[in-house]
Amino acid sequence: MTINRRNLAITAMLASAVAAFAEADASAQNKDSKDKDKDKDKEAVAAVSDAVIELTKAMLAPDKAKLESLIADQLSYGHSSGLVQDKAAFIDTIVGKKTVYKSIELSKQTIAISGNDAIVRHAWMSESGSGDGNWTVSKLGVLQVWQKQGSSWKLLARQGYKA
Image (cartoon, rainbow, N blue to C red; front, side, top):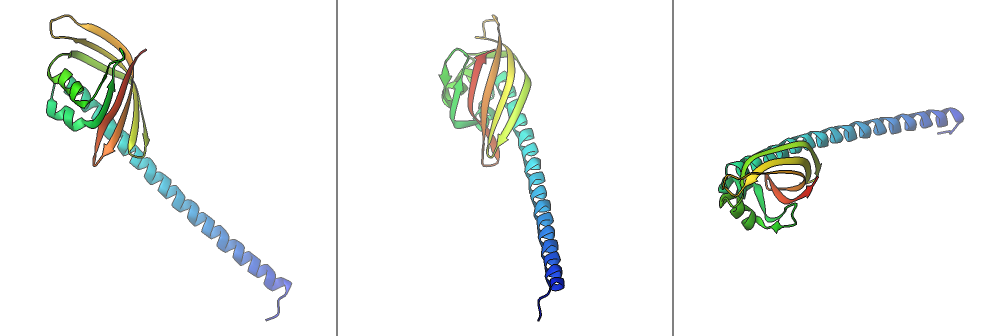
């Protein structure tokens, strides 16, 4: 076979076409992968949002089984006062009615997903007391870290701060 400019030009055009096709295919696959990741993140955000709601309900109407199912064994629950509780102490405070919540309102919530972890921020306003009829209003900022353990999202860490 004789190599001439015409054969060289045809070969170059074919190589360019193959490269362009491969790049377009890779780009389409990358887009599909990104779309799937976005869908997974949307599903995770919805699941974490539901878990936050369920935790709030379990705090308002103390439900030990529900609290235990929503909280990681390694919980670090920080209050705005500086008190830090583990899982057992936090659940005992709620279920033992050492703190009674009359209302909890969460607003300005954001959720960011990073793999099996979620960062939740929200404003917290509550009425709480010790069950003696005297209520204290709290307005705080809250940072929560949730972790996917198995098929469930569990509260791993929480820190309240004066807003």
